[in-house]
Amino acid sequence: KSYQEYPSTWTQIVSETSSLKDFKEQTRTRFSESDNLLEVGEHGEYKDSSLQDEKVKYAPKKYGRMFGVSWEALINDDMAEIKKQPQRFGRSAARTIDYDIWTHIRSNPVIYDGTALFTAGHGNASAAGSMNAVLSEATLATAFNSMIQQTDLKGYPIRIVPKFLVVSPQQEIKVWKMMNTVNQAIPTSGVATDLLSGQTITNQPTAKNFFQGKLTPIFVPWLDADEWYLVADPGQWDTIEVGFLNGKKEPDMFTQDGNLGTAFERDEIRYKVRIVWGKGLLDFRTWYCGMA
Image 1 (tube, rainbow, N blue to C red):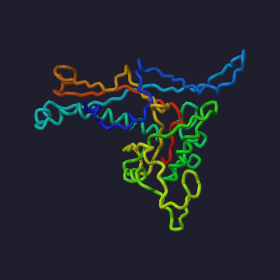
Image 2: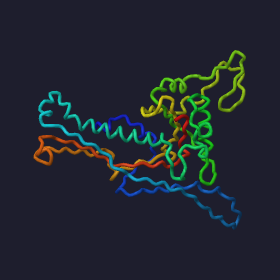
Image 3: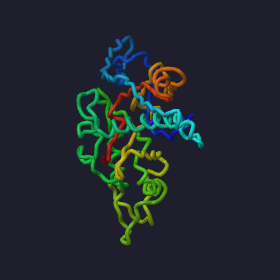
């Protein structure tokens, strides 16, 4: 229950949660879009088409910790705080997964194509890959335009529209203001430049906030103060896969007591928690890093 109730943020951006039968390396194959259709005349021949593919690989790992307590400490535990260690371990397991997934993304790892996740070549990092653009309506517009211009393996436009704006909790007030208020005021001259189109705006008291209602904020506690990302809709596009051994998403909890092992020798109870899982980034096109 403690594991399930932990406010994990990774669950919103994962496109696939799979069941793994062993510790072996997992391989996922991603295909390009199909070729455009060609006109076929009367009695004409249909032309063949082909697909290109990419292979994503990852392997699950085992995570765990142990906690031991003496018989005397349990006797003196008037408030039953020590006996709550299984609940603490449950929260710890959930927190570990959340932290590990975001730490992996933030590290800008080398992915399936042999290059870093966020690069200028991938078109998913601000300022030609420098990843140092402070969040604003202007930098958000740049990120939005970069994502919708992504193409597949064959160069076909796929128009990936971002769904999530991932930021640190320190930026929560700023983000809600950006998402729900007018951000660009027309100066006294009555002329301004629209941040998305670059066109001149005249004869309006204010400029419309394009992003209102278009992005869902996710506030991730593991991010630095000014860090931010855009992520596509995982229900529509491949983002990241998280796999659990035998499909078991909750951790296993073990208690050693009675006349077993060290409990027999030392009058103590030991708790152990274990969970086996892995992760694989499926497509760089569904991610954008503004500042890291």
